[in-house]
Image (tube, rainbow, N blue to C red):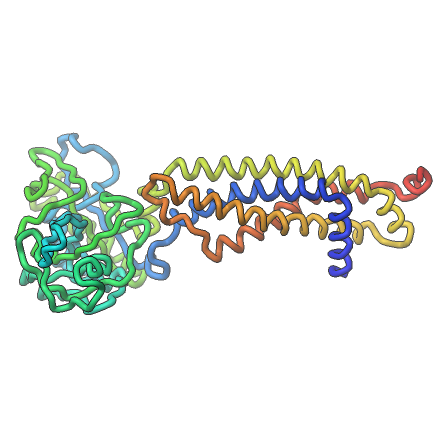
Length: 435
């Protein structure tokens, strides 16, 4: 029966090409606009570590005094150096990584390549395993290298290509800020988006090319990048001058494999805060937070407000297009009152006619979906050429491709409900008598 209705729908749509084209165009414009903005919203609000984000947590404690210089009910977004190393060395999580951002000069051995700066991450050994950073060559360093302040470095595949032509550079040396470092690993293609583990340096379109043991970087006073917040007599650092003890400027992540471990770790943070208050370091009652990756991104509100606004406006435009489509379908179906009345007189039920007209609406939606897909691809191409940090991420993935056609089909069926129902209410006897 569906095949028969489908054949009738094609014949009906070919009968009035202009009206059919207007309905398809209305659906295509609405779908194209809404899917462009929905795809951008989907990409920006996606999970940067699917399957692992629920096990990775960002601990926060509150070391502030009562000076009121840095007010707020929420604890600071980062940790002091003292608290960071205290929590790291407590080893109460399955894995833990303390880190901060930086920028370092690379001094190539080849005279043909001028020195240049790259973004750096100063971190501890568990970073790579915890975030499942893939390696093209080699591996990361271990905890012993952290404590020994080893001159080891992991570089990105982009930097490996620039310095060594993409060859396996493990074991070779690279001069960073006038110091020689031994390359122990080369990462594969890895750039989590959003840049969840340090949103201070940028949410999108940001990736480090050099990873150095944290204590090595601190010992060499490598340049620090990122924000710092201070209270009391604290002073924020600049470049190789690091923030003082009463400043928060480091990020700390832990891996907790079960909800029970997460609950235990949060209680540990409370006990730690009570201990530090007893020692005179903390002035306030324990004020701790433990958010997983997606909760942390939601707290930061990483998706730009303009993207949400554009998505809302685009779906409003889709609604306007659907209203126009309803009017066009109503005019088309009512003009076929004679044909529908003959089918009713020959024994077709109202339910059968309703199904026939909905199939016709669905065909309009599928054709409009193809047009909407083309317009969405054009819209995403325009987004990729805009000067924004997330522009390069605007691509249609398989999930959004399927969503395009489901949305087009659903929208057209919704638009066809009223016209189909109204057309089925025409009295066959009166219609046939008038003809």
